[in-house]
Image 1 (tube, rainbow, N blue to C red):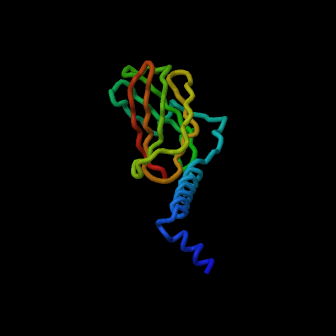
Image 2: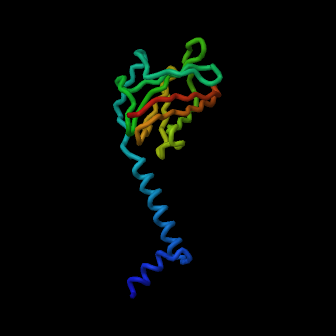
Image 3: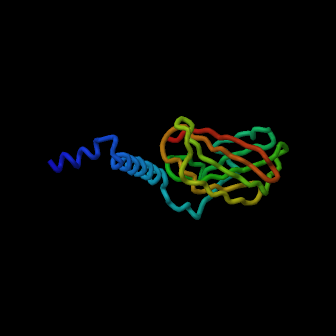
Length: 163
């Protein structure tokens, strides 16, 4: 009889214990999702980008004020997990644009959500910006939503597939 009373406390929707238990399970599930999404791996310290070779991809900014080329270390494709990449930004005449404050958000288009890890942006010389800790935690179609502020106030979106 005691076992039935204990079980009925969880099954009875009018009981506070059931509502609290549901909140705990839902919160725990969300926490597990976040922990699974965040890899936590440190970025490699010896990144090499050949920005003179063919880029991974390139895109023109929304206002047509800049061309952004995306380069990966050793020209490797982006992959599931934590990635690093370089973005070279030039104006309409091909002159590098320095001093841009970049905000980059990885966004999974099909699911309508971003990654739980925020990329780190490090400006380099000649309009090159190195991004580390760029997390694509599951396969699918992703985009990088790039907002630029400072000497260039514009936006760009780069879309690609992660296998």
